[in-house]
Image 1 (cartoon, rainbow, N blue to C red):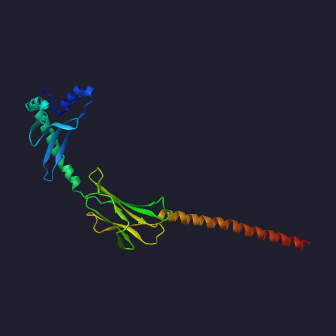
Image 2 (cartoon, rainbow, N blue to C red):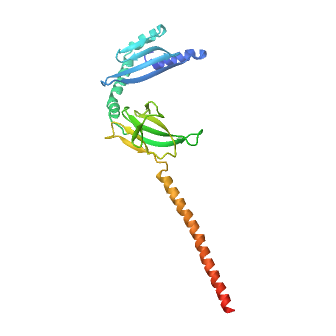
Image 3 (spheres, one colour):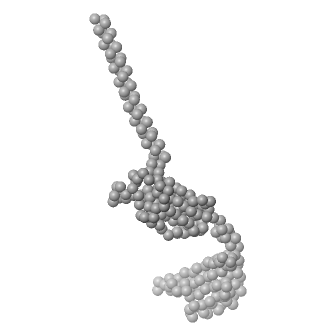
Length: 247
């Protein structure tokens, strides 16, 4: 029992309770505070109930279930167990500079503007302004039509965590795809010296290029047969004149 910690206790509980299909798990985590304080925490759950934990601020194992109390007493009297917990608390503390370095570095948002056509009405669509991969969380996204802020037919999602210390948000604007107004998505963030505008182009540059290339191809396709027809008629007329002269 000298080498037991909360993980070995969990294994013992699962072994005993397997026939009854009980469920248990352990969580080990480092909790950081803005004061750079660190709490090392081991928690043991059994059937979704917290039954015991080690909290570095308390400095000992605590039982929340009387059945676990004998094991907790053994753990608290084992010097090697405390060496283990101190080691991992120091490991948590060593990661603080890295964590705060990441958190304290602002990241400029990436923005993607696209049109989603409505299946119900061919004349209606929704412009989606996706703003993502930014830090810190505070951001402002607005829509402009011909330079004026739009407030109607506009929706926003909550600012959501991306799972990598960064955030994302989406805003939508209902529009007429054929509208001639100049529509833009304005993004304001601490990383930007001034608000940044992202303009919606009904025909992106790549599509315009394809249209232009198609038009040129069509014109060339028409010129070639017309030119050929002209020379053919000219040549046949010359033969006709030569035949009349010989007669």
